[in-house]
Image (cartoon, rainbow, N blue to C red):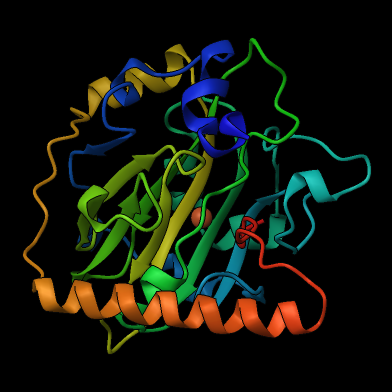
Length: 270
Ligand SMILES: [Fe+2]
């Protein structure tokens, strides 16, 4: 049980990991000059995919190069989140996004652009989940982490990370202006985005295998973990905590009435 709850602490031991993640579990790279690029993401083909919040995804790399977003472990044969196959129709219109995913030279698994409709802090907290990036990943190989490159300009929005799902004191809030580049151990953190809006957020998300290539890339772009949380009223946090607990209790009661049990959320980005 402890191993399951603390998978971040235990399972990492037998994988290759980046020292840059050792302490904080995320790194923020130099900002990218997003305004200098065409908005390729607006030309991509998006598919409906139920994730945390109201989302669509445009796959750039999928398990077999198809226009779909399922976790690689849900395919036949199931496999881990590596060796993604480029989705031709989408990379044809997004060569710069593909090049950015390829720049580290690390193995790429799932690679997609997410479109997230505006939400609020409470919904973001309700949507917190851990990714399942390392399912079936063989020990002794690189731990899968994920890059988040913000494409739209959402300076008031934040990527929320929590070491403990229900403890706001563990919360990290990383602002998301255009060009923000963050790499996160999303299997370690409970995470979700609070998109203030009013426009949807677009972000390039790439699964990378940890190793010397990714380490060199992080170093080249001065990866650092010294984020300072933008202020958020304590009352807003308290209210969200209470509301999320209320919603979870309500859902649990509904499930109990059906003879079922409330389980932790599964990776909604699978
Ligand atoms: Fe996720």
